[in-house]
Image 1: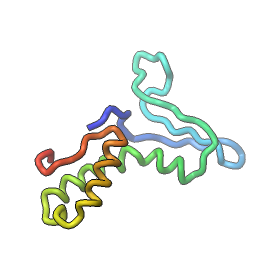
Image 2: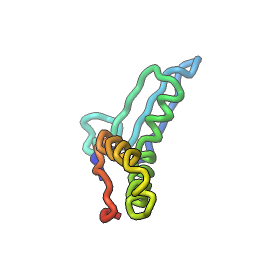
Image 3: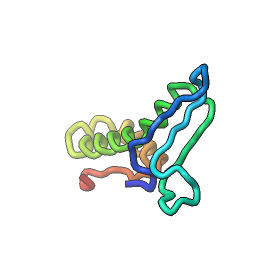
Length: 102
């Protein structure tokens, strides 16, 4: 669907006050022969870190939901919500879903 590093993404918490977090997935080391991942570290709230870690799952779930909604009568009643979902999917690097793509 998109070129992002597939999940699962992981979260590690550091510092005595639990404010320094690392979100990572895949091979985290730059220049590695398997450099197909990432590692982001810094001070972040727990809510922000949790959202980052859940991003691949959210993208997959939203894409599946949009495709099913378009195949049902529900799609006729929520055009604005489907357009907003498509915009979020595109922003995440995915492709908008159509009823024929499932």
